[in-house]
Length: 123
Image (cartoon, rainbow, N blue to C red; front, side):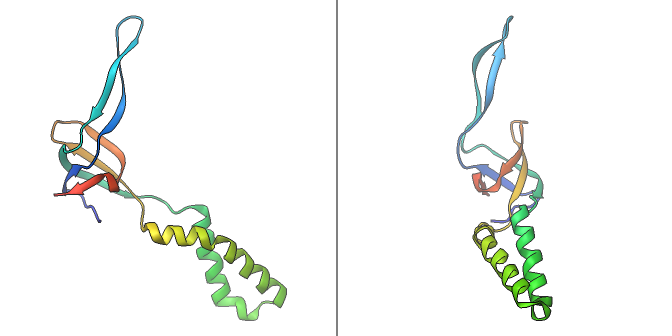
């Protein structure tokens, strides 16, 4: 699913936001949550940065493809081993796709920031 600014969405599951505090001394009096089904508008979509391992995999594979044929055998084998060690993280990254963080302004005025897009359903 690809979310964009201005798109209407519905919350797909209940979200516990935090404790409600009142009184002197401050005491927890309840829990604030957003119920599944609430609707709102996407305000911002931010792509999350890739992990260090994913960036390193990209860098090393580019190095191997461009210069591997000119490297001494031992260096080329060591580089291939380093790439192989990073392949599980690369495969997991590819399976997930681009990770994004979403900011949504709900119709009741509350704002949810930093939400994963998989909890939202486009309308």
